[in-house]
Every structure is written in structure tokens, then in C-alpha cells.
Length: 453
Image (cartoon, rainbow, N blue to C red; front, top):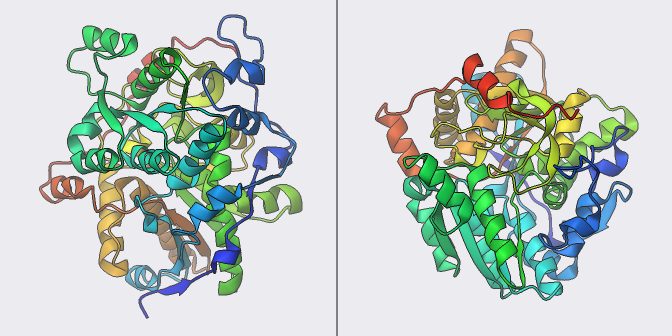
């Protein structure tokens, strides 16, 4: 038996998202005004985000937030997603561990990102907003937002990190198919982009740069708001449909995970798979390890500092509490474009600070090696981002074998790699290398940060 799927019915799609902040003993620190260092009110965010999304962002009291019927009806297109017992991978590793993965790659855009994109588009539409802007790294969020914008009749402009714009042209094509305008970032269309290009004409972009451009356009466009695909609390909230479904499916399998793993860029898919399980640790003291697997070239959780920082390169956002490499950090051109971000979300950062979650860094070549093995034994070619979670799951399964222990491992397959085959071509040709961030580069990147904490 290569695999075994655990399937739910439409009625099992969650009716509410889980807000982990309500159950955290140490709440996430508030966003601050960069000038005064005073906490910001909800009203300060109204010009940038839809009001209901701001209220979800600030909510630290309600553990459950109802999913609107319009959003849940659209979830039915592909949810619930399968939970799969990876017998093929277990056999290949000759491990006593039981390995499960939640397959979010079955969504219309091939990744988990649609869980939040539909919600954000819905709340913008409800408020009467007509235009939205966003950024995208690997293109998965941009594709999801393009689909969601079309579903709710919104006009969308996407700033796509330039290196991914060139590496992943078919993701760009998907966005354009759904009617979005796609701009390579940095661009000459914004003040932030022009400055970056002037200072460094060959710069191939970062998520921080693309965020700056998207925010600038949103603030200058009538009846327009900005939407974000990761990092912020309300995005992580919407993604918890993943873990809530997985809970029921693990019960069907007759097991409970000892380890839950998600790849980590800003925190959306990691939060989605892990927060519903984390609540049992927070409320019932249940023993469970939760691991964020990030690229070794962008190691904010494993090597960054916990400090207030901007969420974008130009400094348009408020000060946000996070594990960060510094907002001017320029990541290498690895193919896991969705993980090239300098900081972690405030909730994940607080959980890491409180040792409620762990983090590991994964080399690029190790991620692709794991991806190829997974594809060969499970029949799914994973996205480069998801491959970091697979590599971490393999490492834990191999450790279980060395210890002679049966462990149950659950990871999130956040997306497929069928539009990332150029990355695999580069891997097979031997053109990919590992990138290690030197201590010198790290210190240079974090040195300008104000010591607010």
C-alpha cells in the first residue's frame, strides 16, 4: 500500500476559524507607531486594510471567529482537503515513524493560499472597496488573490518579486488569466521601487520591496486597500481551516501527532497546520512538538533577533514585533521564493520566544533531495517551499529510526511544484547551490535596528 487517504465531507468544513492569540498566556506585543513608539489603534489601520480584517488582526479575546457563508461556500470547491498516510515514504526511509501529510496542493491554484485570499477579498467587497493591491514571492499568493479578486469582482494589482517574475513565468500567467495586473518588483511605478532601482540597478527584489510598492499604490489609489498573504495575524487565522480539518482526520486514523511541521516564510501555512494542535498544548498541556522549517539562507527564527522592525523594505508599515533579519535584508535567489522574507509574524514570534514552537533551517539542496524522494514514492511533485517541511519530516523519521521509537509525524504539503519545474531542471543540472548567511552579513543586517524591546 503506497498511501492511505482520510477524507472528510463538505459538512466537515470548519464553520469558524481558530484564533490562537485568545489562548496564549503571553499575548503578542502590539504594533507601534515608528516615531512615537506608542501602540497603534485599530483606526490607524483602516486606510490600509478592510475594517473587519483589522478587527480580526487585533482580536486577542475570541478563540473562534465565524467563517462567512459566502467564503465557506467557495471553500467547498476544493475543501475538505485530503489527509494522507505516506506509506511509500515510510517504506523508503525504513522508519518506524508514521508519516501523514495534509494535501493543500489540491486547491484551484495549487496551494493553501486561497484559504485567506477568499476571506480577504470577501471583507473588502463587503466594505464596498473596488481595488486591491498585494505582493507575491513565488507567485502562489498572487495566483490565489487573483482568483479571489475575480470571484468577488475586485480589481487587483500584484507586485511580484522580480527574480520570481523571471523564474516562474507561468505563475504570472495564472494571475493574468484571472484578470490581475502583474508588475515585476522593484519597478519604476512607485517611489519606493524607483529609489531601490536607482540605488541598486541589478537588484532582483525581495518580499519586503514588493510589500513597499503594493502599500504605496494602495495608499495613492481611490477606494483601494492592501491585502497580505502571510505574516499578519488575520492571515494565520484564516489558514487554521487546515489544522482543524487535520484534527478530525487524525482521529479517523486513530492517531495523534507527536510532531507537526510546516515550512516557514512568514507563517501562513505553518500557522494553519499547527495552531489548532497547539491549542491542546496551551489548554490541556498535551505534549506535542511543533516545528517551523525555514531555509538556511533566510534564517529569521533560527538566527534572527526578536525586535520591533518594519514589515517592508521602505519602512511604510508600522513597527511590528518579530524575529527578524532586518527589513533591508536582501535574500539570495533561492527557488523557494515564498520563503524569502526577512521576518516572522508577531504570533509565531511570541510562541518561539516562549519556546512553544521550534525552528530548524534547511539547506536548498537538502530540500530538493527530499522533494525528489517524496515525488518518487508518493506521486506528488511538491513546491520548493513545501519541500523544506518534507526534509524536516524525513529528518525526524530518521531520528525515530535511530531511537527505535514509533513517532507520528504530520506535515503540511502547502503546494505542488508543477509550475516550478524550472527549479527542478536547475537542480538536476547541478546549477543550484546552498546559501549560508554569514555572521558578518547577519550582523550588518540587524545592526541598524532600533532596540525597542
